[in-house]
Image (tube, rainbow, N blue to C red; front, side, top):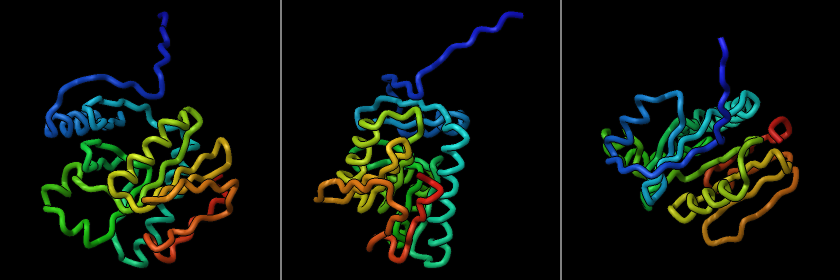
Length: 195
C-alpha cells in the first residue's frame, strides 16, 4: 500500500462567514485542531505545537497556576481557551490571566463560550515553526485591545519582548527571570529551563 505525505503550513488562513455560535461549534467539534478568527472574520487553522514547545508551555502555565492558587487574585487559562477581544478577534494565547473582579463581571453564559474580554496578562511562546512578525503583531493587538502586560518568549533568539500599554516594547536578551510587575504582583517566572 502506497502512502502519500502532504506537508501543510503551520497555519492556514481561510475566508469563511460564520456566526459566533457557528464558530464556537466548529471549535468544539474539532478539538484536535486549534482555531483563531481575525477581526475581519478570517479563520486561522493552526497545527498543534511540537512536544518540546508543549512541554515548555505546560511548565509556564503551571507556574502561573501555582502563583494564582496562592494569591487567589484571578483566573488562569491555558492555550486551548478562546477569548473574543473588543475588536472582534477570537484568539487563544498560550497562557492568559484575568483579574477576578473582571472575570466575575461576565455572565455564566459568557464564561462558558469564548469570553468577550481581553485578558489582563498574556504569554505567547514562539515555537520553532512560528514566524516572529505575526507573533509581534498579535502581541500588539492584545495590548491595543486592553491587555495590561504581555510576554513574547522567543526561544529561537533567546530573548523576551515585553508589551505594555502606551510604552515601547522592551526587549530582554537571555533573561533568567521575568516579573509580573503590578499586574501579577509577586509573580516571578524562572526562564532558566524555558529559554
